[in-house]
Image (cartoon, rainbow, N blue to C red; front, side, top):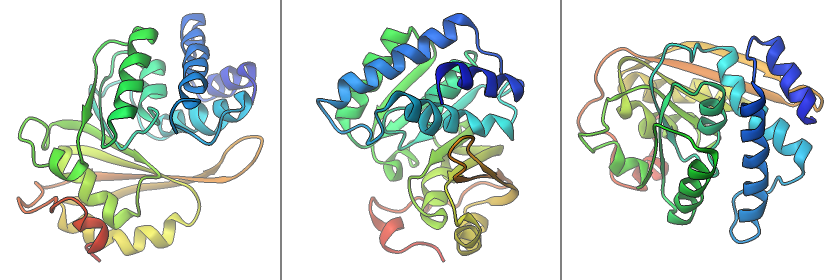
Length: 238
């Protein structure tokens, strides 16, 4: 996907990027490649691939969820900033918090945000399990997102404690999300959530399957969750 296709495809979905926003994506790409030579941020570095599989793919959540209203977004395990920073560029009014367990990635994100002149972004070096116990962040977000971090039963325990009651947890998945969602239903219910919508689509050009799962937070998450770091992965709620 070249830059023109990127802009046209998004415009067809009602997301119109200005010249300044397109310049921000161009700089994002260049900084990603530059820093990737020093540290492992992504296996995808070819420009067309980055625009399709990182930038467009990240923004695809906005095809099914209205980001024009929501203010506070938390991204769990964002790595090089996906999906929340492309969404932030497209919807500049959002307040974005990213939590990641690797400090090197936080350094990259801080530099990136400064270079892109992004406002209302913060980056926290922490494990999701301990971050979710922090009173400043627990149940404080309108939207919590994660893209390909862990299976649904584990991901729900990392993300739902951060969602305010009435807010949404958005999981972005590749193929085979249906089976994963079925196995994750007990965890979602236990943690105060309910599956609201599940959307499957294919990425343009390469036509690989993607899934956007939207979970509504209906009641507070029980205090014992999330459990200690590592526990959700070793002993998922299933």
